[in-house]
Length: 128
Length: 113
Image 1 (cartoon, chains in turn blue, orange):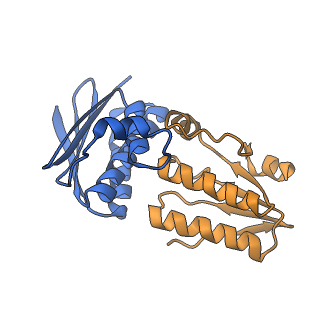
Image 2 (tube, rainbow over the protein chains, first blue to last red; image 1 turned 180 degrees about the horizontal axis):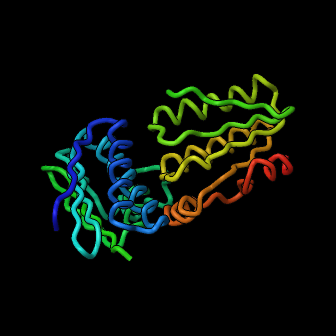
Image 3 (cartoon, rainbow over the protein chains, first blue to last red; image 1 turned 120 degrees about the vertical axis):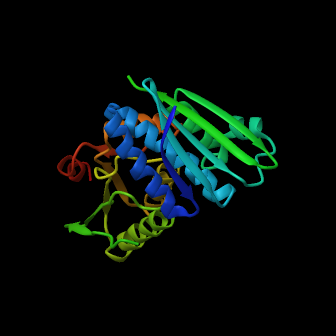
């Protein structure tokens, strides 16, 4: 994986910057239109999660020949019960869980590490 | 907040949403749509989202709430210009626009009102 972009996420405006930059990269890499929308939407969900639940963090975009990897990491309080956040999402619309489950469904893979030192979410989308 | 474009066709309010609204601006704009519909005594409202290539769970939920609020005020609402990628991601996000009237373009939206 080669890192191509790193954006610090501190406020709502940064969500838009992250979306705009991600869109540009997915176009350059040759993703189809619907996949571009999926990837940019996932970035929107994950960066909003940073702004609302951690305050600040970072978005890191990397690529290789097979696809794009997006890492969102913060040094916030972590998620005490990830399983619950991921399960309840659909019944509690608009909450943390919904954005995370949404990002998971839009991407090909989704990994989450969370603890006292913050949260790191890694997602990947294959280039088709 | 960018200024909201408001058009009136007889007693129908037409509002095109611009690309790239941050969350607070999106909330302000939807509130403005609701008060404009009330102020101008609009019978129907057309919300045009054809300029949006991304509607995430926040904006999707906000649009649902706006349509419900307008319906509660007795106004008919049609959502226009949903791009294919947006339609697909909304379903994948678990936010299908069930019960919301949609149309392909402004002309067919106005016919539905």
